[in-house]
Image (cartoon, rainbow, N blue to C red; front, top):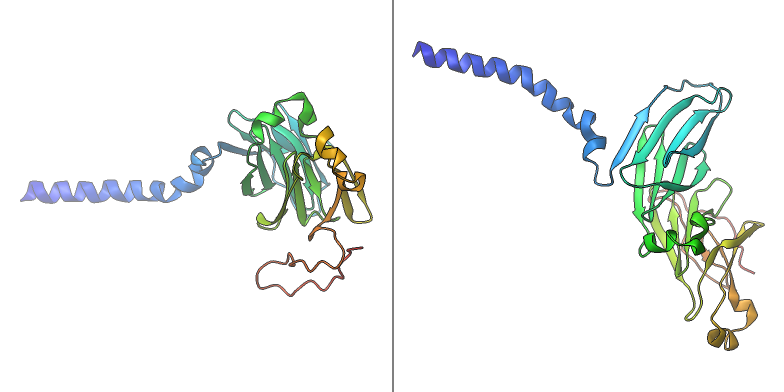
Length: 240
């Protein structure tokens, strides 16, 4: 009986030592077990009022750094993947990766991931120009993000990564992300067509105009992009 009591006491002591470690394990190992191979390393904490932070790619990773000193503040990498293009927005950074994944990263961690279908192989070709023009903001504060690939444009609300609308390319045509231009809040994107399709398509159709609400067409009635529970955006539609 005494032996049984001694074993029970030893087990209780062992559990009291192990349980605190188990409680902290998810926080310590979250990045190692993330399904996208995320690795976030914080080099220096940023206090309120400190100098501004810039972002850049370095050795295939995303690096945030102090603009004045160049000192790294945090680094975000993904196993076996390279960061191709960055889009800096207030308080966070959007990244296009070599496998076609788009991520939104803030100093506290990754806010969301979105996979862009059938993109990885195209990104590895010379035609993709290293992902030039794929990430395009649809407003000044980058509250809406356009991901432009040859066969479709997808627009995401950056606050939560919600897919708001998609626009496929016309049959026989493709979008060219690198051939795009922002003008007065409108994103113009080239949509060249094959010879046969071009003969049946007006030249004006070989370019599309979009904004945060989708393709700009006369008398459109698009849905808004506000977060659930937020007051509707009363901004007038810019369709012409």
